[in-house]
Image (cartoon, rainbow, N blue to C red; front, side, top):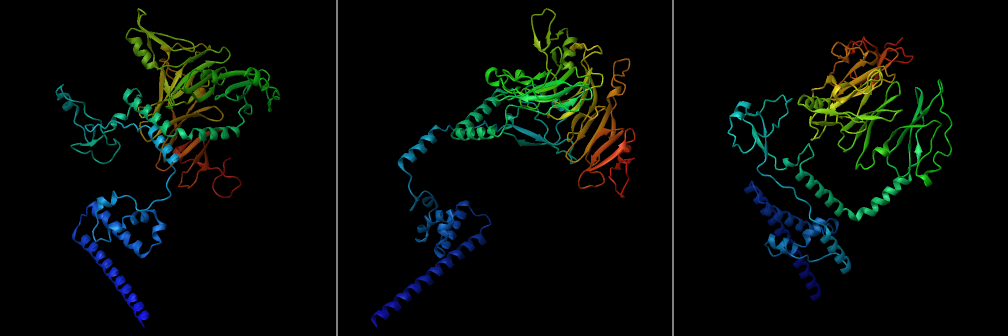
Length: 557
């Protein structure tokens, strides 16, 4: 009886404790609801205490949550603070952990500490709190001119799209720009360059432990590449064109070999063309009569960076035009070369040359070097700016002029020029006599300009395109030599195949008197092939579907 009485008392006491715990939990939840009901804004510390309190209640009801989630394990070490009926947030956050995972070995702790000491702090850029830009309508120039010369700084630039249909804010609103000083399109600001170098150095140091992995991945990728190799020779006119790659050399060597008239397949490849690589570190001729017309490894010597943009052979195959990017900024220099003699000339900004010539200087032209503008007395020298283009180059039919594209301040290709670089007898035109003739200027900032030549080489294609719209112009290259009394090309006015329209993309090439056009015209979900006669483009209205043995639509004759 006594034992039974003790058991009943124990059960009743446990029941009372559980009921008391439920009542306390109910009271806590009711208290939280009252806090939310009475306060529209709750401090962060209070919210954190509420979150920890509710998490603790969940853990008390479902102990399995403690092992399931790290966040609940974090809460569990603060649970004992709730049992006293009060919670000190600062004390809980700063309290030592009542339990911990397996401790680290002393040697591992020391290695981690030593590695942490070696890592430098990251470079922190200067935050200019006084810098800002204006969004909206800027003051008129008269107001700026009337400003006293002691004004602290010029008016910050406008920061609202000129093509926006929304009215400009008036008066303009200042927008904080604390890190605007980091923008330097000229790449000459020493403070910006020093910060970038510090960022690069910091990145190298914190990833130095990955050096072995980087080397392993590089070797694995390289093992899957046949480094000493050549491309299949391609027939073009009187030559077979190809390039060769050599193991350990990062750039190709462009070559060509004579081709017999009507030859359809290239001659046999010399079996021992790469036999002397180990001894002489040079490749032998791949085909009989091989000629190197562009040695890129030689151009890349003593240069930190080099990338070939475009390589273009003139129609008579005597001249070469190529572009090189020497900075990695996707801005290229344009050079022309006489292949048989090896003479080459880099092109310069003729507008700058003319300016210097007008102020009394004279330009000295060099072969394979830089042109220099010098005063009359010859004591001071100044480097003439090189011509900067997007990397594309196209020859005219007369082998005398090249077409290229220049970029604006935003690095957007927007102007197509023609420049005569050789005379009809093949002699080079001096830089001070060269002139740039503008064919097209794209003023819409959403559009970029690209130039190509059709597959048959008869037309120059100028394509202005955005993400959702495009417009194609063409110029017949066989009429490029016709000019007026002032030397301007008569037929330099480009002909448009179809004006740009929203959501309509297309590109075109020439074939036997027709334009073959890839387009999504007519709300086609994918591109389709259409065609129209040259000179009868009709702004897209005369385009016909190109179909093969189909009863639907129109077939070309």
